[in-house]
Amino acid sequence: PGNYVYSVAFAPSEHTLAAASTDHLTRLWDLANPARPTQLAYVSGPASYAISVAFSPSGRLLAVGSADKSVWLWDVADPAQPHQLGSRLTGPGGYVYSVAFSPDGQTLAGGATDGSVWLWRVADPAHPRLVSSLTGPAGHVYSVAFGPGGQTLAAGSSDGTVWQWDIRPARVAAGICALAGQPLTRTEWHDYVPGRDYAPPCGNRPG
Image (cartoon, rainbow, N blue to C red; front, side):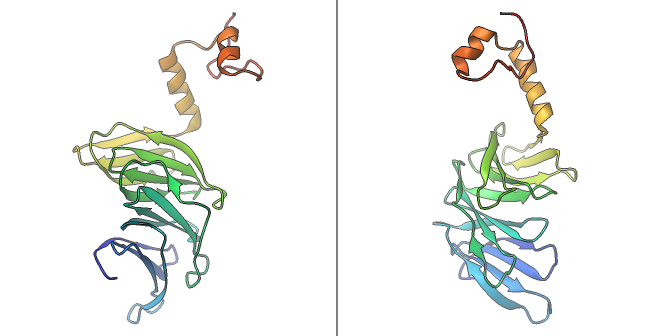
């Protein structure tokens, strides 16, 4: 690398090592023989520093968080010939200092220096979609990690705290409904959700 190396990660096979550098590149090495590492390839794309890197549990996907406020995805099934998947993942308002895949490889999290954490669904990695953005930390988010079951997400912040979220959809919906206090009436439903049958997520009530 031509500059600082911010992050390194092993593929699950432990034969491939990725390193993200401030020269905007992420390099891939073959470590099948650790005494004689061989550079396989590098991936480019970020318009600024490559800061954080993670392999999916299958080892097929590589995610790179960048100072260009986005996350990049590559197919590295053949690490000697990586190719970019879809468009870069955008939304964060700051450098993406940490990326992590859920244990099932279906969700990707990115922690940013604007105090936010972003979740993307990557079940179809060529067409990732934003699931949600989480807020709370008052400082930069420097690290993110999923719990072993994939139901909890933790984030470490420069405000001296660690935040945890239960990201199970049913729990999230229940929490929103608890805060809302009451479901939408039929009139409100048709005002806010026109053209769809009445099906408020927090239960029914007359009206």
